[in-house]
Amino acid sequence: MNYLDDLFLCPSMKKKYLITLTEKERKSLKEMVRSGREGARKIIRARILLKADQSEAGPAWTDTQISQALDVVVHTVERIRKRFVEEGLEAALNRRKNRITTSRRRLDGHQEAQLVTLACSTPPTGRNRWTLRLLADKLVELEIVDTISYQTVRRVLKKIS
Image 1 (cartoon, rainbow, N blue to C red):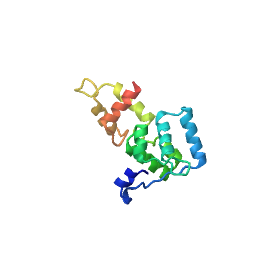
Image 2 (image 1 turned 90 degrees about the vertical axis):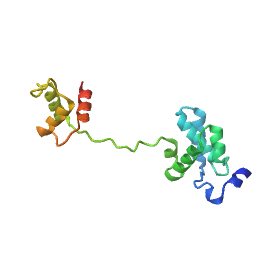
Image 3 (image 1 turned 60 degrees about the vertical axis):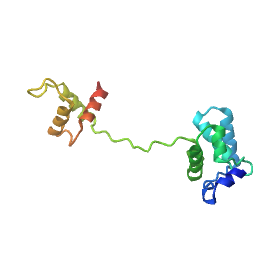
Image 4 (image 1 turned 90 degrees about the horizontal axis):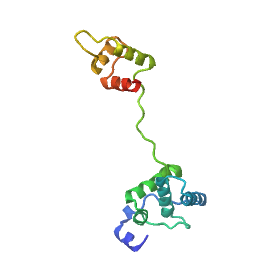
């Protein structure tokens, strides 16, 4: 740290997550940066880790210096530093998986076939054609499903057509 960092940071604001790379980690990160075969984000993250390295062989740059040198925001440097300490090297380098779980299918293949058959049949009396809401209501009425939204009916029919 330089004089300005010590001047503006109180002890409680000093880095909480210190990075100390092993020789093996440092060597693999340098190879990754040098080869350029990885994606741009991964290379930037590797450079962040290399510059933030607090070991004797590392430059131990501040987050501000790293952000200016690599043209990223300070928060990115802090986040990469935290992920390295808490989750390890691979987690710090790679993108985080989307936490949103995929929802299960509302209709199985047999139910989809029944929906298509229903949609191709003649519409109820007094109607010129089936609407999505009518189809959804009819599926519930025929006890093909317990509940279903008209948007699910739309997605299934769109997928099939």
